[in-house]
Length: 226
Image 1 (cartoon, one colour):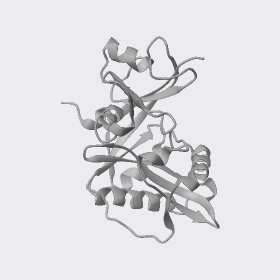
Image 2 (cartoon, rainbow, N blue to C red):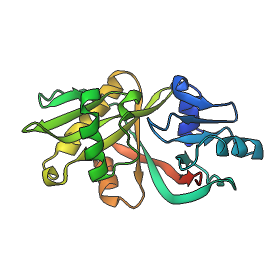
Image 3 (cartoon, rainbow, N blue to C red):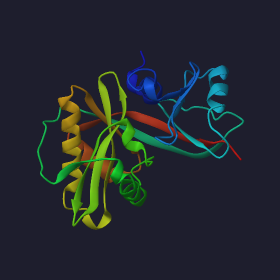
Image 4 (cartoon, helix red, strand yellow):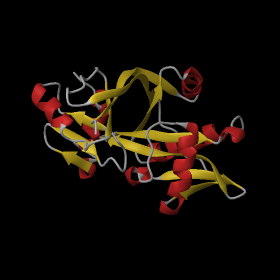
C-alpha cells in the first residue's frame, strides 16, 4: 500500500493544502508564486496531459515522487535529481531561544536573498504562505532561518533551513531545526524533510538529530518552452 509521503505533493494538495491547489482532479499544482510543486493524479496519459497543461510559457514545475514521472512531450526536462526523504524517529521537544523570532511579509525579500545564497530548495517571496517561518538575526541581518512547507494528514515538512555561510559552524542550523521541529511536533504532526542524496554532510547531521531515511525520491524540474 502506498504511503502518504510517497506522493507528497499530490497528497498535500488533495488534503490539508487543498485551498492552495490549482488544476483539476487529474493534475494539481501550487500557485507557482508560492512554490513550483506540481503532481499528476496518477501516471495515466490523461493525467500527464493535464499536468502538461498547467504551466504557462517559460514556467517551471517541480515534481517529487517515489517513482519517476515521465515528462510530457510538450514540456522539456530542466533537471533531474535524487532526493532522500527523512522522517523524525520521535516527536521533538519544543525549545525556547530568545534569538528566534517569527518572520513575516516584511522579511520576504531578505528571506529570498538568504535562500538564493544557500540553495536549500525551491523558494519564493511567498513561500511563507504555506506555514510559519522563523529566523535569527545578527546586528539586524537575517543569518539563519527555517520553516514549514508541505502538509499531509499527520505530517508536516520542515523546509527552508539555511544559514548564511559566514555564520555556519556555530550551531545556528541545528538550533533552527530543533525549534521548527518542536513547533511541528507540538501541533501533533510528524516531521519530515527532503535533502539531495548528494548532500551527505546534511544527511549525516539530520541522522544525528533524530531523523531516519524513509526512502529515496525522484525530483524532476520540467518547463514549458516559450
